[in-house]
Length: 192
Image 1 (tube, rainbow, N blue to C red):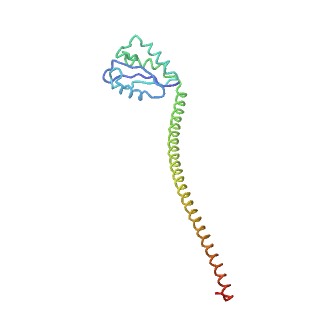
Image 2 (image 1 turned 90 degrees about the vertical axis):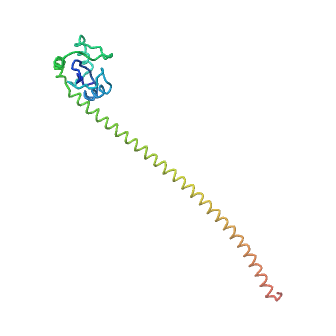
Image 3 (image 1 turned 120 degrees about the horizontal axis):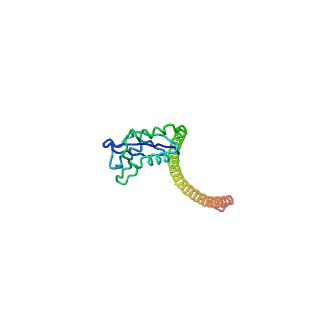
């Protein structure tokens, strides 16, 4: 996988040089990390050179081997060397012809995938919010449905009561009509 091979120096001490590599990040991004970690006891590292190469770990290993006799053992850091900027740049010069087009294409695709990933994460969050809203709306509809069912039951019982009352009235009316007919017939016969 393509990446960067870089050489860095602390501004406060030009004696030291760090030779390293990174995949997916620039040398500048790596410097920020190293400065925040106080790598080698320094927080003022700066990029003095970097290359984009197809196999950064292979080139880093070659450069470490080339300068192994100038390795500085400081705070168990294994990538610090005592070598001049010009000598390191001369070593880097040999590798400047390494093809970078493939790396730039891959980096562009990687960045596109990151953007797609972020868009998908936002879509998922949006769907979660929509799902929660729909769930809340569904709960509200269930409550409204239960209220309507209760209202319908009350109306049904009220209707049943009216039917029962109407039957009782109808029975009383039929009795009154029957009595009225009986009295009428008695009256016509003169018995009343």
